[in-house]
Image (tube, rainbow, N blue to C red; front, side, top):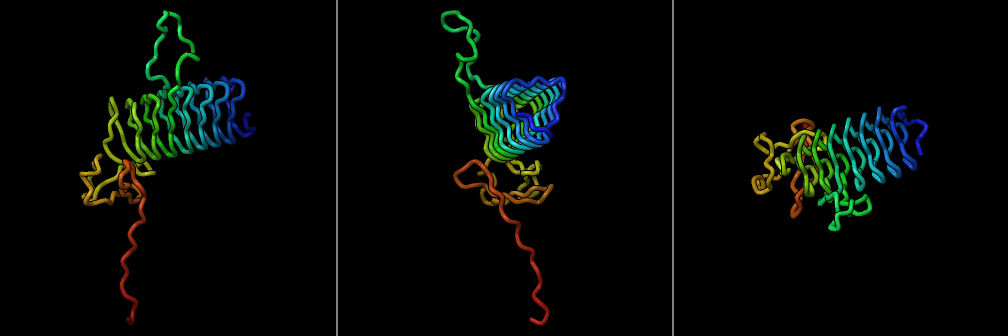
Length: 227
C-alpha cells in the first residue's frame, strides 16, 4: 500500500505488496522488492535497493546507493549513509558441493536489526547476524561483523569501538573534557560522560556494554533572603 501523501518518483521501481507510509519520499531509480515496508516521513534516496521483506520504521533515512538485503529491520529514526551495504550471508558461495548453482532459497538468512536512532556511515558494510544498538554510530567505511552496543562509536576494518555517542550525534567527553575512552575501566572512577554539544549526561550501565542517560545536576542556588 502506498499512502496518498507519499512521494514516489516515476523512475522508482516498486514491486507488489510494497508499503510506503505517509509523507515518505522515494527518489529516482530506487528499487523496493515485494513485501518491503517503509514507515512514515522517511527518505529513500536515489539508486537505493531495498530487498524483499525489509522493514523500516518511521522517519528512517536511506541515502544514495545504499543496499539493504533481506533480513534487515530498522526502528524509528535510523540513518543509513550513501553506498552502505547491509548483507545477510556469512558464508556465501556460488555453487553447492555438487557443483550446482545456489539460489536464493539455498542460503540461511542472517538478520540485521538497527535500533532507534542508530547511524550507519557512508560505504560501511554490516554483515549479519548483527544487532546495532540505540544511537550507535558506525563510522564511514567500517566493516561490522558483530553486535554493536547502544551509543557506541565504532570504526575500522574490522570495526572496533573508539568512543561513545550522544543521541544528538555528539561524541561524549569525560570529566577532563577529552573524548571518553572506549573501555569502561579507563573511566570507572568517574561515571559521568557529557555531550559537549547538547550537555546531556550519561553513565555506563553496570554489567552491560551500553550507556544510560542520567539527569543533569540541579542548579545550586543561594539561600532565600531573610533565612
